[in-house]
Image (tube, rainbow, N blue to C red; front, side, top):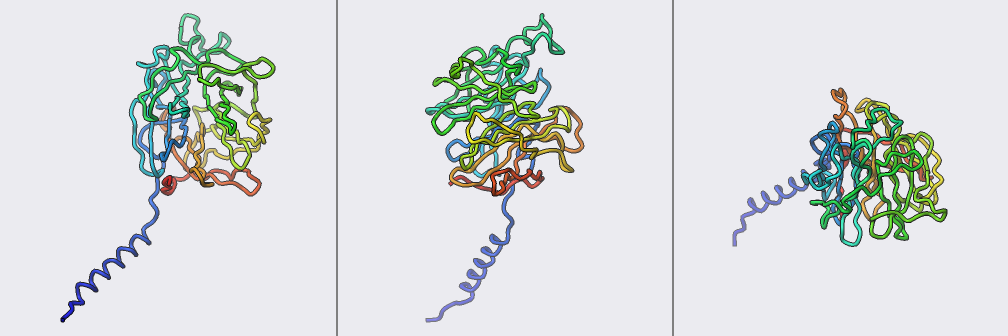
Length: 339
């Protein structure tokens, strides 16, 4: 029987060529910014097998009235979930909503946020006749899915009072290994820490009866964020001014979530790529030591105060656990699906 070797050789060559092309093709990268639009204050979190980012819609306060969210299975391809929450659902939020923070508990998804830029009479811009100046604070919304829609959980702010000089903004909820949900927040150079109660409707007092303890580290301005790695608690925060190139990220390390937190140094700040890099969070791929810094920055040249974009870059550690300075890139990170 005669065998036709030409087609067989052709298909073998084609298969080899195809494999070679796949091997030589560079890894798919996210690029920076990772999605279009002006977005700031991003919080990254993993829900199931998906990465999620909840940012501030970066605009003037009178326009900053809703939240979008973004999800990805690989850190490269992001799906936009529009208007997961807006002021139609939060009746008491009338001027601005920003700095969202999301966490899952018992099958429900909770979105914490700041609203109305509440002031005290001694602050510039305070108007006793403007209700927005003295009502508002930190709210919480709830949904059955991470992509919303979210609804107002309490019908009022979760926190609207001032403690230890901290403006009630820029909250972050950290779940410790024992199940305790610690609540970090604070603007105006003060960082407070409390403990959420079991149903997230209020706070459990500390042993001394106080609802909040001040834990402000040196240089702190706003934007606290905590994560746990190798039994070390890392507290990050933003320094400088959010409206300009002085914005940057510093951090501390401690052996317990309550500190004390001694400033170690700056790990993210302006360079030749961008300025105003700050208000960060961190994402860890579950089951690995792969870590990423999620943050916002201002493109160069920058034409507007609110022109901020969300970016992601690799976060690496030294042998002693300290964090290496973050290198801002335009390439972003390689695809890293959750198995």
